[in-house]
Image 1 (cartoon, one colour):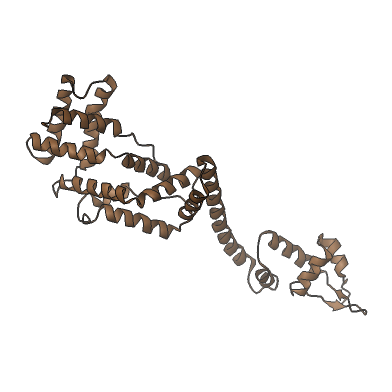
Image 2 (image 1 turned 180 degrees about the horizontal axis):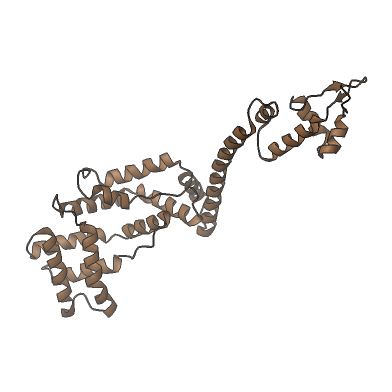
Amino acid sequence: MNGDTLHSIGDLARRTGLTVKTVRFYSDAGIVPPTDRSPAGYRLYGTDAVARLDLVRTLRDLGLDLPTIRKVVDREVSLPEVAAAHADALEVQIRVLRLRRAVLTAVARRGSTPEELDLMHKLAKLSEEERNRLIDDFLGTVFDGLDDHPAFAGVARSLTPELPDDPDAEQVEAWVELAELFQDSGFRSTMQGMARDLAADRAPDDSTGLPRVLAEALRSQVAPALAAGTDPASPEAEPIVTALAGHYAHILGLPDDTDLRRRLLSRIATMDDPRRDRYLLLLAVINGWPAPESLAPVLDWTGRALRARLPR
């Protein structure tokens, strides 16, 4: 053999730190074939077998399968190509493991039942395409028939959750709860009614964004009254109600009368749904936005103030 030193399986095992059984397995698989045979028929290996076994062990430690390893050591494919493909596969596995960890952490924090764990796992492991279908179905129902409205795209975008590739436990838990809300027919109906009401309250060429403008007016007018402990049915609340009704009348181009105030009360009642507040909070958690300030106290105060001044 041109003077090359030949090694028995036992020699290879000692040199590489592998067991004799493992070396024989790789030899039988054709990954480290013998160079020759001894007079007694035992397999003998050249010095390159040590290097091949070291490479095989490294690749196995990195998780590569034996058929791929054989192609690498036989130079049928390049090591950089295999490394790049394996790195991509590992990235997917890492994301899956992180998602599982987040689900288990959320389950531990919530004290979930086995049924809730199953649901959380199913919703959390949805692919991006499946998540998008669920979101599109919900928003499509909410904004059905409003596609041509100037505010549609912006509002839909502001209500769209985007779960990151590496979500933490809080984001996974928020996504699962939000996905459950998506499938709540009562919530869908409420959100659809709110969207239609808000669309009806805007002229086709209005770009002021009524929901935001109305919400800002409510906060600026009512928050000080709440902080001061003003009774919504008291005379002190009258200027605030007048200002809010006047603001709403200006948006619509209508007079401030009983019909307009009833219409405003109806809008307030539709918006004053705790599920709406919860949706916006969960959305902020998933998208990494600052937690929104709840409108519930403001809406409740405004509703009581309007009802106190409308004829029964």
